[in-house]
Image (cartoon, rainbow, N blue to C red):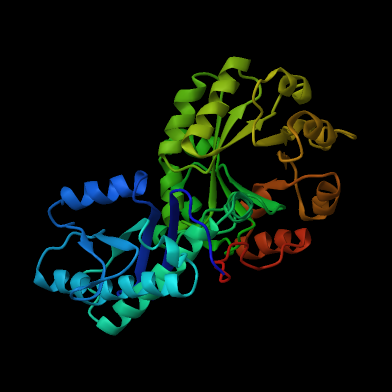
Amino acid sequence: MTNEIDELLIGEALVGEEPEIAHIDLIIGSKRGAAGAAFAGSFAQPKQGHTPILGVIRPNLPTKPMTLIVPKVSIRNLADAEKIFGPAQSAIAKAVADAVEEGVIRKSQAEEFVVIVSVFIHPRGNDYQRIYRYNYAATKLALSRAVEKFPNIDKVLEEKDKSIHAMIGFRINNLKKPPYLEVALDIPDWRRVEGIVRALPKSDAIIIEAGTPLIKRYGVEVVQKIHQLRPETVVFADLKTLDTGNLEARMAGDATADVIGFSGLAPVSTQEKFIEECKKVGALSLMDTLNVQNPVKVLKKLKVTPDIVELHRAIDVEQVKGSEWRNIGEVRKVCGNNVLVAVAGGIRVNKVEKALKAGADILVVGRAITAAKDVTGAARAFLQRMGVEEVDQFRVMTDF
């Protein structure tokens, strides 16, 4: 099937295995437009270590549309240069020509358009067969994606909270699959905390809370220490901020907190600044309603609402009849259905079903787990009662 190209198009593809893995970024467009200007500019102003070269199928046979290959990794020596000038150059040029033959690019447009390909060759890649095959496949795929304008925005929004980038070394959990078990570490003793963290089962459904006493003793940097033990786990910094909202949110964000908590007793402006700062640092904001008489009334005053509202009952009111999680429905009306509602205070295994039935997304548990003789078993008992399947909520898509 042939395609009309009437604008600047962009494509990307990653194919193969290290160290010969191929990562292709490319643009295709008219010689008379932005692509043509970029082509001429790159060609006329080469940079040391990243000299662009024309894509040729073999010497004296450039591909069409004319293709400029720009190395992403600095060419340091002749061995690096040979990989670009040999298998990569030939593979990319052949892929462009084949794309024309197969109708991805119209034959009538072969003289009208140019292609700029940014190519990654790992310095340790030495297998020319693999370099050729991977770069050929990646270029063909990137061209097809460019012409098809893949991915569309619906695909991006669908996948953004599911997918992971293999190079960052850990998974990002955006709390899109409740319910979750939040283990509150209010113990100001790092040795005990470390033992508890190591004993917790590996599960996407667990959130680790760096409690206020723990942070007060060791500083907000304790969040980083927890992340070093559990890089894949969401860590919540329970600051209970009452003042300087943006400053404290920034501090916790710099310490790698995934969720940052402020007090619902803080001035409205402080809460709003805190929430906005959390958005800037890429963390979720949590309002702690401890001692807040009417959380819904406070939420209605905010121009921006938190990502999580924690209905927190103090110890001395835990057993008051009718006080359990009565505000969940009202919180959702104010904040919208995307808000997560956490419940804290006296959560035991026998109350799990009741809390979930009331609409809770996050169950905050402290001593029932942290003071247990068998921390692993206690946490698993909660997870089992919550009905959380031991499956990875994040996966690498194999259909593209």
